[in-house]
Image (tube, rainbow, N blue to C red):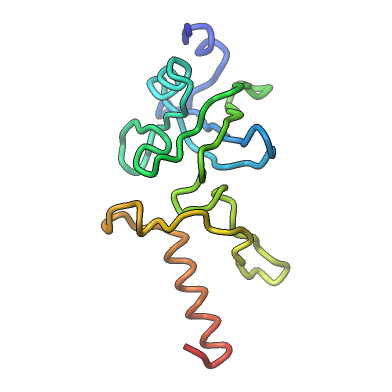
Amino acid sequence: MKIDKILEKIRLDEKGLIPAIIQDEVSGEVLTLCYMNKDALQKTLDEGKVYVFRRSKGKLMLKGQTSGCIQHVRRVSIDCEGNSLLFEVEQVKAGCHEGYFSCYFRQIDKDGNINIAAERIFDPKQVYPPSQSTLAGEGASADAAKKSKKTGTS
């Protein structure tokens, strides 16, 4: 697919990135928000699988490369101002590296507490190298420690 026509219609930020919302085509559930550079967008359009630019690693990656949880692109939309993209995908297994279908598996209640609101599909410890830390895993441990302090359990 010719990317030149698309690049004329979208606005990359000063780092050459554009936010991309990934949504499950069947359920309509938002799976994640990621960033793409020109190369990630080109590979995504050419191959029909979501590629992202990992800002933390400074490199292009196939979404699901390690876990096998690939996202097959079904539709692509551009927002009204050309500053974000929406990819409707067929999600294989889980969309989140924490093992959940969506990265938005934590809900905040009216008291500001964060609660897990979904079932984990796979255990990330069984899929990723031990050196890969995760925010949600750390947050879940912190939440468990906070709850045990409140209840006196451990």
